[in-house]
Image (cartoon, rainbow, N blue to C red; front, side, top):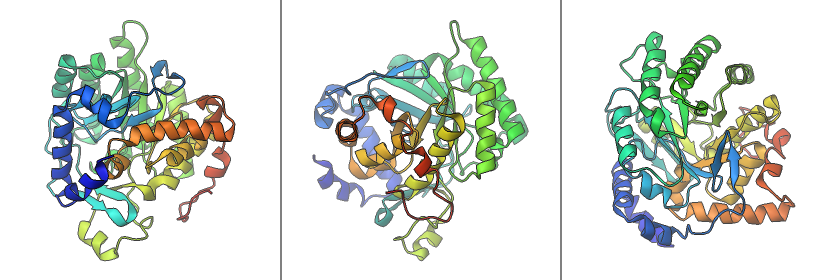
Length: 374
């Protein structure tokens, strides 16, 4: 409602400064007022069950928006069905030098090379112990920058043990392009060893049944690599896949001047240009697993139609980040309301019926394509 007037003021600020101010303002606003401002009182018409958890609606907040859980209860009040905090690492770390976040408004996109800046897994666990959000909470864990790749498993295990009591599910980030060497963990042998160790420790820490473990993957994988990851996920018993992280590609940007991109340099691209690429990855996972592995779809969601495309490609849940930056806190209500209207229009009685209904179409997107399935 008010965000179209506020956004120009925020966009005059350096992006990370604007983000810190906005997150701080959300953290200090009473949840009841946030529910009123975002009109988040209405509930999705059906409860949604995924990997043993119940979600009030399918729209979640992606990792990276609140890495340290400083605004977690307030963010839940915006109407999200779930929020994913982090990425956190075992050790607190500053991340890459600033500036490290860049807006590309012509393409409705962001580039970031933050580098897992966070207060550490223990600090997040402490905050959640004091104030837990009123929705499903995921915690995204990554590798500490100073830890060599050959010691990554122990580093992830330490983070898992710290956050385990406070998470409804835990996401394993092996796909950020901003930590040197991290994406090597998507190789078959390294990924299998890491996920097997995490799953075993997860079983040991769980009194009843293990917490759902998910793995977050890159959008830049070839078909063979994607099939390998799916095979590892199914063999190890990983509960789901988050598709996708940011991309290192720049050819998907069609409006931002080349000289602007050259000045920005490295980093992961998110937002509207990522939409079709991530949809294709989602669809391929859905087809490879025949829908047996739930997918959280993320990348380029700005409205209900974008979310619907993710669901029709094969996503069981969706997440927003860049869309929240550009559209404001009312995006959650608008997506949920719009999804209900689209389901009625398309003749689906439940969200489950719609998952993957256009997977074959979306899987046809190729790396050289710039367009989208219509």
